[in-house]
Length: 156
Image (cartoon, rainbow, N blue to C red; front, side, top):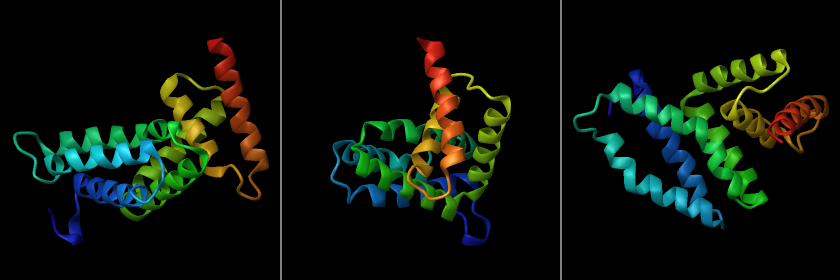
């Protein structure tokens, strides 16, 4: 792997997923166990890529990071809460630029006042999961719930 001074995106994402899956490994939840097993099975393909550019692997992992909250929805509520915290912590530690991009995407949806598509729905749903129960987030949650409700109503 590249040196600590100059980690590329792939190295940051591997470290992020390592930390996240380590946190998941202590949860009493079938989905968490499945996610840990899947990461264990594929990790070396990212650490020692063969025949695939590192940038392509990093792009795929970044998409996986975007979709990880969707995978956590089948966890029991306590496990999902801890998994969301672990994901946020690992992302902040290893790839804070991703959080800035995500915050920008959330801000765009809120400014527009509507969710366009399943990807944005999961982005906003994950944001709700992160801030539910946090003090001082009532107004934010109301706005997010309104966006989610309107999107789900459009789907019928």
